[in-house]
Image (cartoon, rainbow, N blue to C red):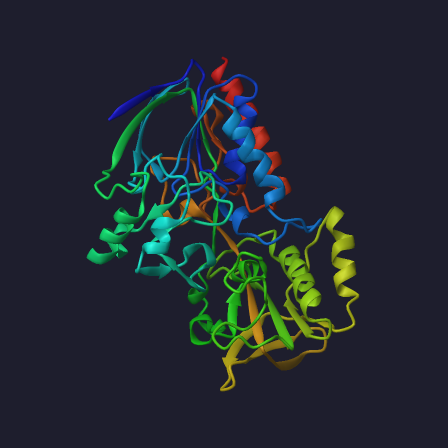
Length: 419
């Protein structure tokens, strides 16, 4: 066990996505020490998995790269990946937090040369690409991973694989004997920026996600459209690689449903309009069908919506999808009631995209310590206890709103630390 002591007023930020990065930088750049903790192997969270942001449609590297550089340059920020909170004791202004670091099996000697991956004979599902392809059991999480250091899935290594990756590393960076480490930090306040997880599509049995390669989620679409994704940026049907002549977007897949997520997930409509652009750029004549309850694109996003709805080859059907039927040729038939004309519609397409909702991660994995949370698993800030929620841990939000929320969280954390 090691102890880390920041200066009086240090801030712990739990979660290293765009929300956690923003919070950490805002607090550190006004003079507070910050401990930034991420349970995964890299910083950047869900944003790193996107192909483009809306509405400007620029890649996530635009926002993440500069934040990574600022993190590297700021000595007040201490970063921990593959690390979780195990316990919290004390009170506001004087919390003692126990962190647990899982073994990466690659130490700081790593230069990201890739020799270990090249030599590794063992493969695993690529989690970053939602299992749409494979990667080696010794891998770099993604092309712009920060920290730029390989990870080894030791459980997936065969004896021959273990021997191969160790022999391939000329920098003595591979350490298969690494153990779990415990770190104790002392902080004045804690910001929970634990982010979100795409709602599990198999829970919506009527949408048949697990029964056809012709049904994907909106986050899978992001990875498929990304140049570094499983298809090199080509939007095709998984399984047979068929190019798309017709595609359906199924809105509110799990959201606004008392049996699943009762709230609106805020970003799904805009995500679909963005992904319509992906499709249109690759397939100028493809038929696009959007099944929706309401189209919610408030304020500055209205023009973005209007431009996509003007597409002559796009059809919008106001009606919640009741069923998706897999077809023998790999396509699917989407069934819904068009509430505008009170008629049932069945539309066969090559690919259906489920606009799955945003579920707060702590609603799935549980909070490591007692927190104020609403019925949906979102964290409620408790300023008296210096427990502060940020980003999508607080509410479903887009990237812009998330960064604004995170700046506000940093300000509250600073106020607590300077009482």
